[in-house]
Image 1 (cartoon, rainbow, N blue to C red):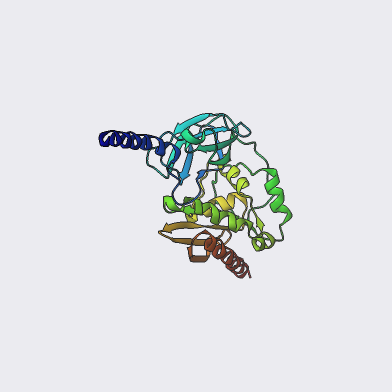
Image 2: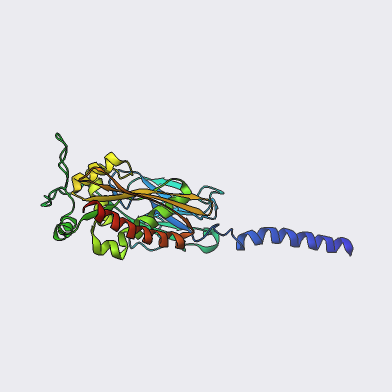
Length: 298
């Protein structure tokens, strides 16, 4: 009887070892799953880089690229996730021009076609040249190459606000992988800050990226590059910087470049504890940026 009971317990243990992992998949570590791309707009032929965060690390899960509006059961161009990796990068070949969505399917063996995270982007096939009526604030260097203008809507928006300064926020560069998502948070918070919107003519982020793609330019926080792009677009000021995650601390470095004066007119460093504190500090930083720009032109 005792031997029989031991056999039953052994069989039950084996069943539990098989069943439990199936029903209790590993959960994402560190928060909700996130996917995004390194650009919002790609030229046809460019490699699509998809960053993923807080993934379960299951090799049977996958990420795909599909046209916007496709049903969630459309697998599209997909790649399996690396095992035991909660964050990283997957690369995809560029699809044909159009609007697309990155979709992550985590715990697929249990959940099936349930999207865990998604992110939209576009692919373009060259951009038409549009003459800009806006005069640049700084005289371009001699021998400067021909520049493809921005979309007319963006140029018109800045021209109508000619009595105010035109300002662009370059994407804040993540210093490490942990800071990738915070770079987007800082950039968007500065662009959409109410006082910034009312004080300056803020260039739309997608208009900036469209211009950069058309002219084969890359945004970064190098001063000469900032001045070059700002001059081509016809901006007065560019806000740029970097963000770094050090354990629980988020460090943000910011600088404001005057295109006409060809120099940095403001620098700032803030330390935040979590995303809520980060947004509050960026809003305070935006007030300091406004004051600095107005002082530099008085």
